[in-house]
Image (cartoon, rainbow, N blue to C red; front, side):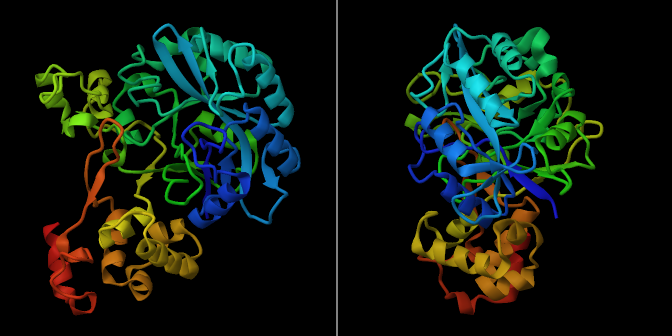
Length: 429
């Protein structure tokens, strides 16, 4: 079985993050999802680092930690996200280190550039990407740095607002110290393969969740062979882009991401990159600038055709969170009683979400959840779920065929839906 790891997460001490994002709740959510390793996130925050030191214990000097406050199979690695500001250039970076001493060393350095207690995601002023790598590596040579959600308009190193057109441009002579780039939810590796300047960087995927629930944790993550049981082995596999060790990444469909296409949320307007270009990036409803989507930014920087595959590329698998599928079938939200009951039954049967979305057969799923959910899980596994693309901070919206949805628009009850009609619906979809 693969070892699933989501390294970019946040604690209750980060802005706009649930107060329920404790180590214990994160571990519980990770178990339900099927994740084996979580990043701690936010190790720069004094109160969170205090909890980390009190509740996590390193396993055999591996850089992997176990939680001592509750019994759980979830392990942790020490990570944080840091924002750097250099004039108008603003970038987020994920930093990984193997031990608590490293964290203290980095916190001592970072505290000279920003108030670490203000936010779990500290903001370092008057700090370029080059300076950030230099100061981080000087304080902790074992630290690994990964540009976070590389393509998002704000704070993504290749986003529309970053001011950079390549990782090499941003990090200068320190670019070789950067091990990978994070795809973010509005892009996937297939899109990134089109940009040749990224070839020397591995592509990692993490979920950047703001709550500890399994429909947020592990939406995007990394799958390693089960012998990658230490910090050093994991990053050796990443650095070498070794497909025998770094098996694949888990991605959501880029259309599901909040910044896939260009648009203006206040006006409810979105458009393709061709249309954004025609409109000169101005909203036709209010004449204010559009937020430029990842799709358009990829087109601007791509020097290879759509469908190009990088040599020896790490594969990826595209799925949406199970709770999103159930919510779409029931025409309701993620937190409704119907969704939680259906989700709970499936977890009780199969153990965790990854077993459901990747491995369970349609017949097994149908026995527990009914025809519609089973069919939608199969569509999801084959990346065939249609999505109205997300834009300007709004998630994409799942679009299912009417015959696979339950609720008020149905003409017949679930038990009355014939197998042949469902098959016809899937064929048309």
